[in-house]
Length: 150
Length: 152
Image 1: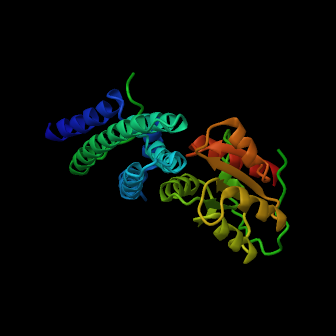
Image 2: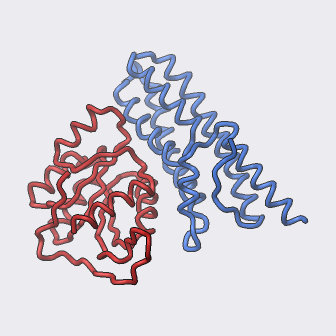
Image 3: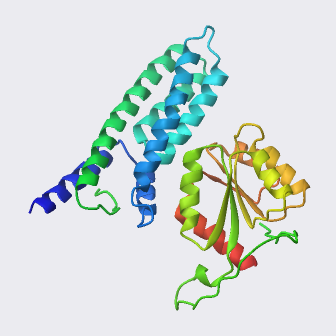
């Protein structure tokens, strides 16, 4: 009974990440790549994402402190950050990155700063949720990829 | 799209012969292709390498365009190159032009986070056979390998 309960808990946690808009289809693509040779493939990719993007976030923070703002540089950094976020299916983070780039195009520095704060917030929330999910997954029975319910 | 076999005499393609599975397009019956993944993003290299590992292919990686060109110059052969656009030292556009100038006739497919048609078109002009958004999906990878298979 306990095993089934844990399984259900992990499944509910996973489903909520999609229902609440934190993750998109790309995350499922990663899950479908998991196999016996790489049972923690998704966790490895997500860990890599948080490791590599922390440097980018620092660069963007520093670039936002400059006066005047270099919107081309900001856009380049954000393009990379958006690309990485897209690769793991980080839906809300990706949306903020898109908005940031729109503000860069029109030279709206305040909009950039505001949106970046939101992007960092979503990035941190997702990190916490994924850490909790992977932890639960490791302690419970193995989870297989399945499409989220509509 | 025209796919041509590489002309290098140093190519090292292994042939894998297994029983054909009825009713399926069985890639395992075809020769083992050599694929080069060129991307400065470690996440993309990991994802694309994993996607490719599901098929009977040899995989090599390069972290920028210069590394890809150096690999080719040193005698490596690739049936398929997945080329990122924006990379430090040498970007995908320059690397593609260089590889074509050096005589690589194999399939080079651009993979880019740039979504506009004009940006993709500009990248194509370097000598790509095709260009897709990244990360690639398993369906897209399968389709590329099937195309290679058909033309070899």
